[in-house]
Image (cartoon, rainbow, N blue to C red; front, side, top):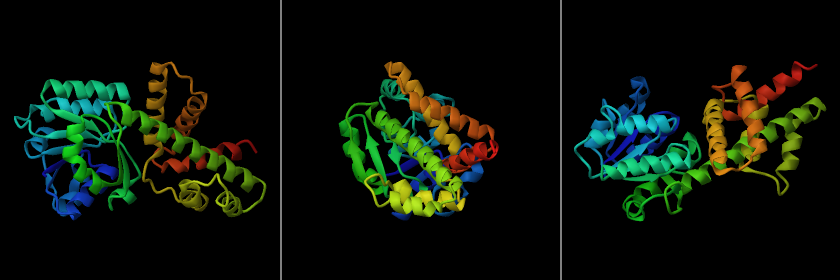
Length: 292
């Protein structure tokens, strides 16, 4: 199967490299051309528009920032739907509102194009070896056609039924990430202010029912001050806003995530936006140092 990937950021690059390493023919498009150099060196065909990717693909994977970007590369000038080739399936890995995902799927359907949503959990470090967790929603027949490819991208693939479901789960998952990063940041800051080695805190935490993958791995990088980004603080803040917009449309009150949005917004103002999302600890430390 010929695969197209539109959006070569950190995750898109890792997904592309994994598929190239497995021997797939991969075409790519990215608005910023310098970001495609690594995948091009590894055998990807670089195209000058989403339309040209569609001309050469049977499966198109979209990995872009937000719903507006999805719409632009799909339905804009030189977009996917301008291709005369209609024998492809679109699979959108972007994290967007479920209602917008449904709207985009309907627009593709009017063009006789099937669209799946395939948000994932996991960063570039696991994407490059096909160890993501993928949630899929959309037409079952399209999923079955692409399933073998998805199983190369992710080691766990969940088919969740109708359009919108996978993005709903993805937003709920990223809500957990938001809160875990904040709670670890506050816990580490508290014990450090108490003049206790935070590694002792983590050792005790990880001996209990309350341990998480984040507390067992990323938390130690947080202590060491290692914030090399696999998923930036700015991107998580974007997803937090998407969670809040979705909850409001559903009439759901989520007071903790509303407060978290304020904290992450302030952290970005303080210059931490390009840090890994766990760099929120630096903002927590900064506001505490300024109070002393």
